[in-house]
Image (cartoon, rainbow, N blue to C red; front, side, top):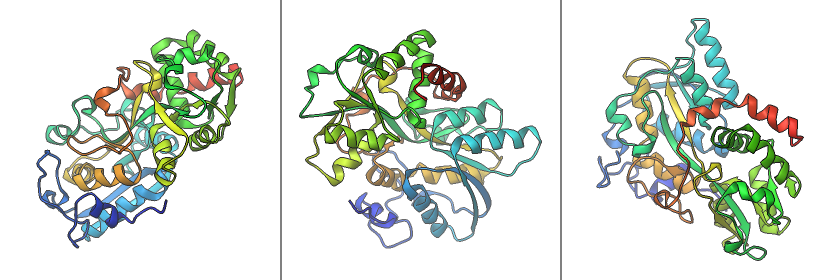
Length: 344
């Protein structure tokens, strides 16, 4: 499916004027804020941007710059984990080069907040977010839920256990991407929730009937082709595949109360004091940007009242585990465990 431009995406979200950013009403009935009500951004900002989402985050930045011609936005791009380590090193050295850090995973956010580099965010900004995603020192932008994509011709829903842990002993052929960062965050969550011993046993069990893929889009495509029965992947890979192939033989299942249904998030941290970094974050939480990322990236909007992508179960019906997402920064023991088992 050919992706729409950012402005086309905003038009589809209901922002239909020809003004930059496709401005809608100042405040929607649901309580989410339109860019029309936000202050203009003026001055210099340096953003460290974790790579991700096939250029869609770049489209958002370009639209913000177009809306704010007096903003001088400098962007340093790289892997989220590498940029987080850079920020920690700069903080320890007493050097401030970044005003904001937008990461595609919460583990990298945890590295930065644990180092004391994050600045507190105002209550009115945090209150826009869903109640279970309000944090004092960082702001989630969009969410993603771990899912179990399965082949609808090879597997019946009742064959899928409610516990992801039970899949280790099942007869289902599984697709996974052990080298992929999202999968490693999932295993980290399992370590935290279930312990190292249980996680090690799970990895060994799955490895006996698993097919390895380079990434989670590959997992979903392998499921749809019937190479495997079921897989582990973030939700949006399945939704993106089905957007271009509505009759694809793949559907989503969800485990309950364990790491297999973890809701993770991309997030942003203010590294400098003042209104400008905070107001930049407000743009990412606007009705227009949240709707755009939901429609084009199939990510889950975390601002209250913005519609989530079609084809995904409502967050209110899911049973994700309760945990501080910043703990996903504890990745080293996970990698050591995966190497010990031989899946990396």
